[in-house]
Length: 262
Image (cartoon, rainbow, N blue to C red; front, side, top):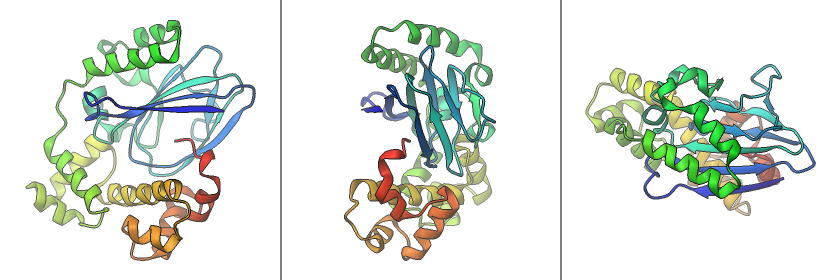
């Protein structure tokens, strides 16, 4: 398998994390996708075949939307397949797609069926198939995102997410609501619509994702150190979240991080 990460340009980093290019070569690829609160747009070349444990064994559409997840799921990419994964920021889904994210939480959908035709997904897919190389494909997606990302991200949601990340998901929903100047109930509605998750669950996934990244980037760290650095009270609390959200332990991530594609 060949996988390359292309981080978002400064112009797009308010809605885009980056773009993955993945080729399976002559072998199939199996992987576990961990929840990280972000939506993904997945585009497949002709002849590619991507299936997952959450779509009854059906092949994903040529242009698919994987909504924000609350649990890990399995994927399988057939040999000689090539896919492009456009990873939006957790706050980028609604501005880019014009689609409330709580409509697609824990779902894989045909992108052409869930967004308005004015978004020109079919035209984008056709141009993607005819692009001569990976660089051309990436430039194509970036150009499309530039046109689509004109809608402003809700500042209260952005402020709440920034605070969650800076505090490792430890502020609490009531404190966050006070911080951004809205009621707890209104913050819940805003976060569910813009991100697809309840605020408390979003905090949990932010903390979990921070621990996952630490186990990947600094695998020599002892697990108790990773737990504290990620914002957990101790390792047992981290272990519990790993099992609830991903069905694996932090130790398994350390040993097999290369097979966790997303």
